[in-house]
Image 1 (cartoon, each protein chain N blue to C red):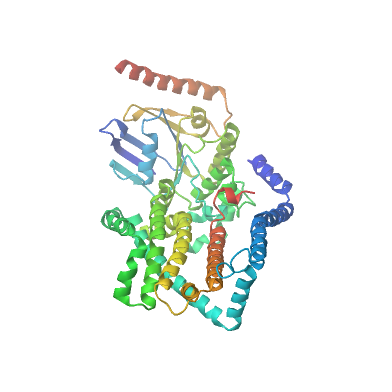
Image 2 (cartoon, each protein chain N blue to C red; image 1 turned 45 degrees about the vertical axis):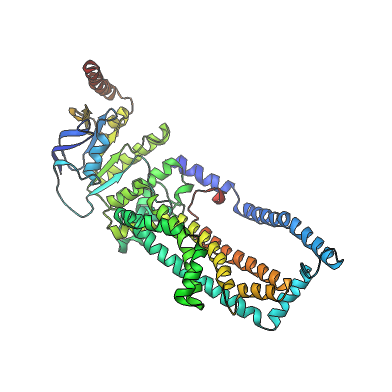
Length: 281
Length: 243
C-alpha cells in the first residue's frame, strides 16, 4: 500500500507542472497563429480587391469601410443601444427557455409517468419548425418584446430540454445505489447525485440552446423591431448599405462567440472532474 | 448481532437468487460467503444492504443505530465530480461533511496527501481505498463487501486485504465478505458459508480456527482450501448428474 502511494508521489514530482503550463500557453499561441493565417490573407485580399475596384464597392465594401461604420456607430452612441437590446432579448429568452426546460426536463427525466404523459407532446411540438411560430406569436402578443422573447425562449427550450432528459435518464444506476445505501431522500438523491451526474449533458444543451437563441433573435428582430442588430440588418438592406449589413453580421458573430466562450469557460470550470480528452495532462 | 431467518429472494421463476438462508453473525466477526457464480451471493448482500427489498423472511440487526450498514462494491463507485476528500465524507450528515473527520480515514487507508484529487486521477487500488474509507466513515455496525478486490491485480489485492485486516484490528467492524476467491476468504474470515445450487442455499459452513494475521499458503489453510474445493466440486458433479 505504501509503495503504490509512493510511486504516485514520485510521478507527480517528475512531471514539472510549470513546464507543462508554459508549454500549454505556447501551443495555444501557436494554434491561434496557425488558425489566423487564412483569415488574414483573406482580409488583405478582400481589402485590396475592394480598393482596386475588383469588387463592386456598393455590394461588398472593404473591411476598413465596415470597421469605420462600426466605429462611427460607436461614436454616435447607437452601437451600444443596438447591442444591449439584442443581448437583453437573447438573455431573457435564454433564461426563460432554460428555466422552463430545467423544470420540465427534470420532471420528465425523473418520473416515468410524466415522461409517458409529456414527452410525446413535446416531441410533436419540437417537430414544428420554430420560425412557424412567428405569425402566431405576433397575433397573440403583438410586435413588441413579449413575442420576440417567447420566440427565442421556444428555440432555446428544446435542446436544453432534450439534453436534460437524456442526462438524467443516463445517470449510472450504480451511483444511485450508492446514494440509496446512505438512505438519501429523493430530494437529496436528486441534488447530490442525479443533478451533478447530468450536469455535462445539461451544459451541452445550454450551449446548443444559446446558439439557437442567437439564430432566433435575428428572426425576431427581422420580423419587426426598431432597435437591435437584426434591425440594423433590415435598415442596411432597405438603404442599400452593405457596410451596415456586414457590420451587423460581424457583431452577431463576435457576440455569439463571446457568449459561447463564457459558457465554455463555465463548462471547463464545472467539469474539471471529467475524464475526457480535453482534461488530459 | 445480525440474524437472518429463512431469507429468500428468487428471480426468473425461482431459478436464480437464493432461498432458505439462515445466518447469525456475532459482533466483530468476519463472515465469508463463497460460491460459484449465479448462486445468489451478490443478491444476498443486496438484500442485506436494503437495496433489494423484494425478499421473504426476516433480517434483524441488534444495536440499531442510524447508519447500521456500510457497503463496498466490486467497483469503487466513487462520484466522479467529488474530490477524494468529499467522496470519503459523502455518507456523513450535513453538519459533519465539511469537518476534518475525513482525515482520520484518509490516513487509515494510506491516501494522505490525495484528498484533493479527483477519481479520474486515481489508480484502481487507490480508488478502492477511497471506497473503503467512504464505507467506514459512517462507522457502520456491519460492513458488507461484494467482491471488493476482484477487479484488482494480485499485488494490490493482497495489500488491500492486509489493509482491511489492519482496519479490523482497530475497529473490530463486523464484516460480511462475498467472494469467489477461496484464498481471500481463508485469509480473512472466521467462518465461511458455502452457497450452492440455483437458487442458492447454504450447503456447508467452514470455520477457520486460526489466529490472525495468518500466513498465506499456510498448511492448515491449504487443507481447508482442499476441503472447500472438494465441497464445490461435489456441487459441480451433482449439477452434472442432473443434466
